[in-house]
Amino acid sequence: MALTFSSSRRSSGPPRPRYDREQVLTAGLFLLPALVVLGVFVIYPIVAAGQISLTSWNGFDPVKEFIGFDNYVRLAQDPEFWNSLLVTCVYAVGVCLLSVATGLVVALLLDAPIRGRGIYRGIYFLPAVTSSVAAAIVWKYMLDPAGFVNGLLAQVGIAGPDWLQDRWLALGALTALTVWKNLGFNAVLYLTALQALPQGVFEAAQIDGAGWWQRLRHITLPLLAPMTFFVVVQALITSFQAFDLVYVLTGGGPQGGTEVLGMLMYREAFRLGDFGYGTAIAFVTLALVLGVTLVQWRASGAGKSSLR
Image 1: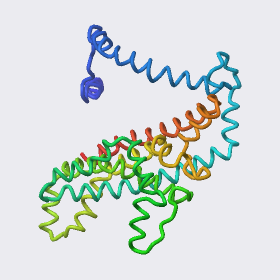
Image 2: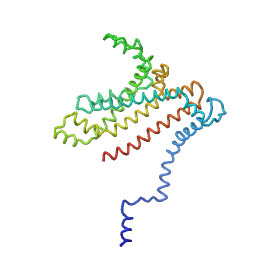
Image 3: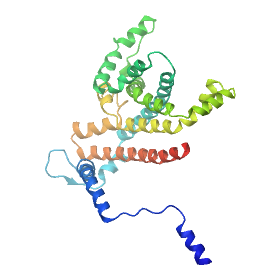
Image 4: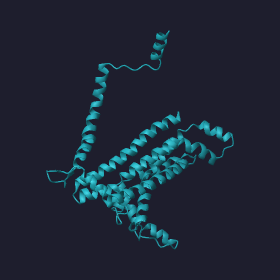
């Protein structure tokens, strides 16, 4: 009896798939082109950059002087790095909060049964397909002291400030530009999640007397939690990788007020010619982005299980 019981316990559960040698070789052949591209264009550049971050190199000298972890020690003692990290964190928090709020509001509006809904969806998605450089140039002219924004304020008797010459105003303008640029993408994400929600739950709540706000607060928002987390992580990654919008709109100024990590890396490597130190900054940024991506990956698995 004991042997029979033990055998039945071992045989319980789904059977494990068995792969023969031919199947493994076939899978390997199909994966080989992708692995070659990944190795040449992703893995090798990361390894090479890691080696450069351990050297003192100006980008042109054929000899790279190995200095170990001196660049990282210097990084930990550099006040400009800590200023850039603080600016990037403040910028990222603002982008995350506003991305969630604006994306959700626009998605709720576009999900409503209104006439010309397809036209509105196209209009809201236009910033996402607009060139980042072109968008930043237009915003720079709009925020000029004699530009469009201050012209509107003058119409109501308000003297507009010099938006891009004040530390916090410039950072706020950069945050608003980033949120506007990604508004259509975030709205599409939320709209897709809204249309995938089970309608039977909303119908049952409406029969029970729940109003629109109650359904939104107690049903819609909790069910959208996985998508909200995804939008937050996407906004964080975008913020830590920001460069083009910052470079065109403010150039990192005034006085380092908008110098995010990408701008600091560019200045150290390409303007000052210290590629070893610039690459060390890039590697620290990569570590932060990978950390956020790991959180996203783990949360995505938890989100899927919560919707079952």
